Image 1: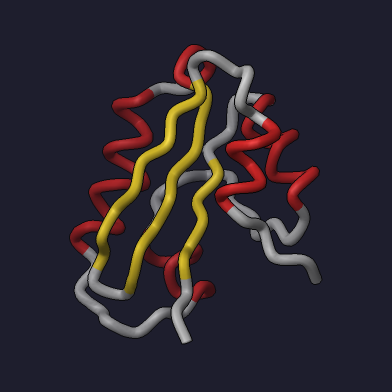
Image 2: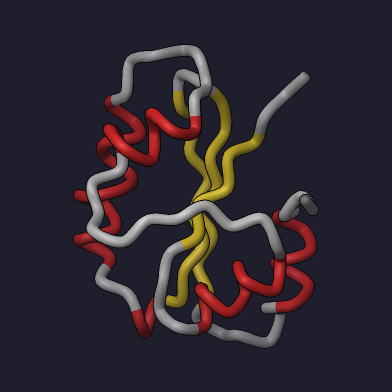
Length: 102
């Protein structure tokens, strides 16, 4: 399983003029949200992803819990490959990266 790195995504998408990167400081760690502005609904991103993550009270990181109980969207899946992440972003999806420490 390869680890998807924010820096690698930024390199690949350097010429996409409206790609957006948001960094959140959540209780359980840093979260990076990546999407193409012209293909995504920013209100929905805010309401379904950003707000729930910021309001999540737990300090412990559990990806299954976050995917199933925190992020409020219909279609959610875990990606383990940068090519899949890039394809998802370019197809109008939001990619959420969780920065784990330690």
